[in-house]
Amino acid sequence: MKKSKNFKKIACGLIVILLSCSSLLFGQQGSSASKSFIIEFDESKINADYFDMSKRKFVTISNGSKIKAGVRAFFTPKHLKRGKVVKVWKINDSISEFEQINPNECVIVLSDKYANNKNKIKINYTVKKAKKYTLKFSNDIEFQSFLDYNESTFNKAFADGDEITEGHFFDFKLKDGVKNKAWFVGDKKMWHKGRRCGFCVSDIYAKDGIIEISNK
Image (cartoon, rainbow, N blue to C red; front, side, top):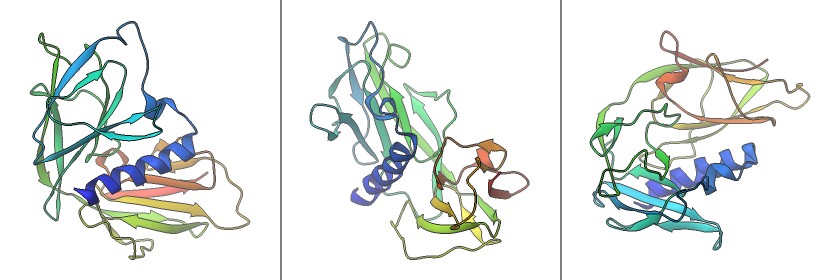
């Protein structure tokens, strides 16, 4: 449980710093902000929490909790076996209809869009074997850190041409003296504006089995 939550918070924390965008954490307040939803999930296989603005920290969501509309809730799997990754997240038994930049995390702003007629939002997932990809990056870019979702391992270094696994998190930076332009992972332009770029290995970045990080 602790490792899974650490992964989410470290990855999320990096994104927050890079984006400097509070809405990523705090959610969006709308006309239904006073409404609450009952959150249902299996606590033996899912971690859940949200960011409390007043406390300035993440607060755990328990199965059956009532959470206000507009809150951005985070769900991550517990105890994934090595080599496994989330295949699909299901909300009220329907496959989630949004692109996941991290397959091992489901992030939603609680609203009527996801609730059933009893104002309940039920979260579940299925798993699959994690895919393998070839990592590519130029001499202008340096590998910084790696996080294995299952093991929270930071002490492994990766080089251009190495094999990487779906669901793992990587952090890169430009070498000193290299002009910062725009970060790309695969053909997707990233939101990062600084000299560092972090991402979770996912099929959305891959082409012909290769995931390439570039700054151009």
